[in-house]
Image (cartoon, rainbow, N blue to C red):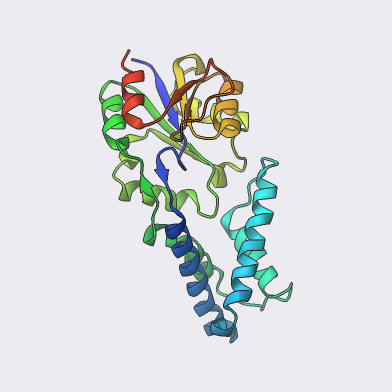
Amino acid sequence: MNRALTVDLWDTLIYDVPEVDDARRDLRLLEIGKILQAAAGFDYQKSRERMRAAYETTWQWLEQTWQTGQEIVPSEQLRLYLNLLFEDKTPNNLPEPELLTAYLEPILVHSPFPMPGTRDVLLELKQRGWKLGLISNTGRTSGVYLRRLLQKHGVFELFDTFSFSDEFGRRKPDLAIFEKTLEALGITPERSFHLGDSWQADVTGAQKAGLTPLWFCRIGAYASDPNVRQVKNWPQLQVLLQD
């Protein structure tokens, strides 16, 4: 076959709902608060609003930074959060590994959901000889934990390679992250497709790298470029890639 499909993660392979995202946030702050109390006497019970405000401010800063294509790895995100929480007077000798685990592990407790049909379609493509890669901007989590999430959903073993922005150092639509993924797959861009929901990160990024973009859009919107094929669900992708 000698073809490849690279896939975005968030809102393409998995999806979230606000209630689960909120539960993940609350668990992060609870576990971080417990660690700070044990290590530095921080009264997290009386500081819940302060902790949440610092969390939201961190998110706003991250979103602005990500717009530049720069990646901020989770350990740096955590340091920023603590600096905001303690107003640049973060206590010394905090147990950073424990805090980082508390920051990252909630993704496995309150997990996003797999898009319907993902495993069946990926398995069929795999059996037909397609090479499969995943390219993900990681957000508040890390490639290490996202691999564990993919194992939980039963699709990890179907991919031949993974490119996570926190490990790569740059975010989609950076050209190099697509090139690195195709190099690992051993497939040329002309024989490759990329499926993703973000027009800028996925469609534009794939086009610049020479892959054929497939816009994953479940909400019925219309592509601004009529030459870009739209995919509304995974069974539709299965039909599209039959040839």
